[in-house]
Length: 447
Image 1 (cartoon, rainbow, N blue to C red):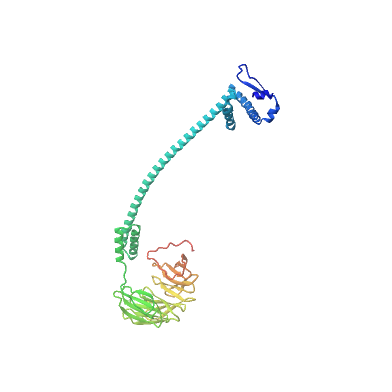
Image 2: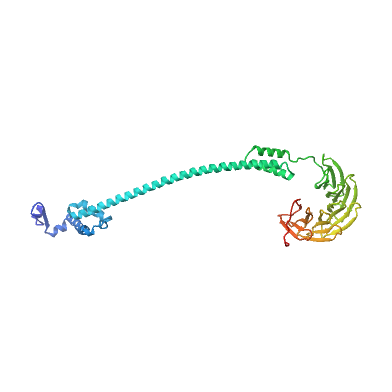
């Protein structure tokens, strides 16, 4: 510094009366222009002085009693810059400036501490909630498990009760009629399917041991197409493609007689009194046979195959159905034709009503017809959209059921010829039958 003073580049003097600090003044601009380090000192000091001026005013504003609000304290980037200058040039700052900066720093630290406290409390609260939820979930699982065990126990008891009920019902049904007998076996199987049990096993074994078994084989030399039991059940008549109808003893299966035709035999029937047998054949005849002597009594001629036969209830008349388009009624004793029932095509089926007063026929001409059994007068025409393959009267004779190749079964009122019920099938219908206890409620108006 003395060298600079001797060169008259700077001047020196005491800064105050204490004579402890020396103040240096630059008196030559070349020193400022050429001394790089000095330029950096001046630049840094200029930044500091500019910042100090701003911060000093802010400190004075904050220090005023009515202005001391935390919102006026330094924060963020401004606080970081102030903290830097406080660290580097704290001695050059006014005490008020330092207080202002330190208060700002303390406020920041207090904010951090408060935020940390809130975060800790939130974390603690979340942990407590989690513990509570875990406890509640554990309780719920315990109750659910207990409930499931209770339900499972109840379900097992219910299944066991149902199994025993089915087994017991099976045994009761097996002691009844034939149809209930088979139901009993099915119930025993269902009982064992649900749960293995001794009662169901016993019921099934008993049922299987009682199932119908083949008593004997009744041989023919061709397909057997029809069978009929005698009224007292002692004989069985069969009709076959081997051109014979045969009579068998039902007790031992022994053949009792052969009733020969010249072609296939399509149908066979016993008279209700059991004294006569009638057979129908492709040889264009139906034949009446004595059931006792097995001798032919009469030959009933048609113009084409005879494919269906029936006796009336008092065994005095026979009805035959033929592909010649007629149904014919014959006297059993004399074999004389009494009258014809005319259709427009093949007659495929024929039946007497239970009281013998009416006759029903079914034909390829797409109709079934009801006739007076005494006069042969047509009483009603029942129309289908294809061949009628089956007809039968209800046990009380008030209704008739028909089955057709049009895929329907229909029930009709015999007195009016009105259709009462129609049942649709997915294919041809070849046979129909009434249950003995069936009841048909007739509508107030026709379908």
